Amino acid sequence: MTDMPASLEFRAATAEETRELGARIAAILGPGDLVVLTGPLGAGKTTLVQGLAEGLKVRGPITSPTFVIARVHPSLSGGPALVHVDAYRIGGALEIDDLDLDASLADSVTVVEWGEGLVEGLSEDRLEILIKRAEGDERSVAGHSAEAEERMIRLTPVGPRWATTPFPRP
Image (cartoon, rainbow, N blue to C red; front, side):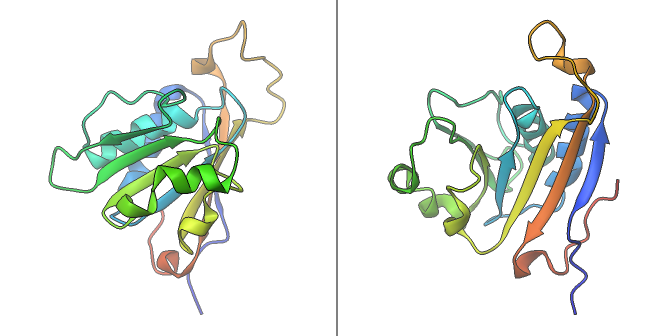
């Protein structure tokens, strides 16, 4: 029997709360962990990664790597590096293979935005994080500050690595 939660849901009313949650999640991450971020454009994926980076104590700044595809942020504290990938422009599994992410996976925390359906083969263990605007929040990305929009953030652990991991609580 395992204590692994099926999933946990959090609410973040601001970008700062999203970053704070990212820092809390970073406390359970270590070398070899794969995090797959899913959510619509402007949902707060990069904002969450900023919190992960803060919690992992890596060199920044953390910005969306959309045009460079992947950035490596070395640790400032002797911990694992953060490999931050944006798979938005990736056309399929062969292009993921070309990034050679598996070469650094064991030594780093690898976070892939837009990775759903592309990177699951990298590891049987992963933390899937879905970020979306809270139900009923009809404001569009254009014309409204993402800073003020409430987000629902769902963490779903996949694989045996997470069976005994103490997760942050909502």
